[in-house]
Figure (cartoon, rainbow, N blue to C red):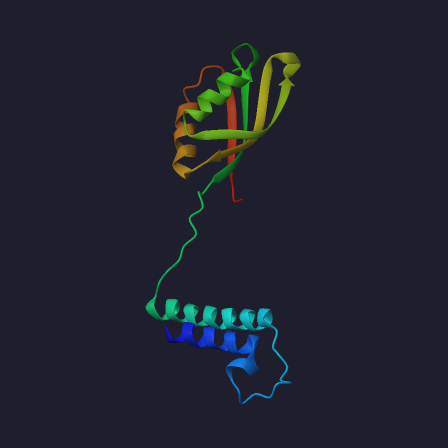
Length: 148
């Protein structure tokens, strides 16, 4: 409260010093209120920061965490999933594949797609690994954890 009163008083005096403080001569140069206000706000900010540190208030920025992996999957061409099937199957396991590239291998007998896997938790990759063991038509897969 005292800080606010002092700041307001300084601003009022700075705008018209001769009117409010007759001790100032009429020719007294007025201060730039914008610059004065900027200085006052900076000072009050430092006071507020000191109070936060003193009382131990802890501020955290909550950003949804993502984990990434580089992945590749090789299927028998006849049993390779379509784009929609692949997207839905991965989504059901909490994983998303982005930056996808496709390859046709062994004279068209195999199809491979690769890209970046995104998940919210490391456990989603583990669940995907377990499910891939039972995926029909999958010849091989590889995903490598990436720290992005």
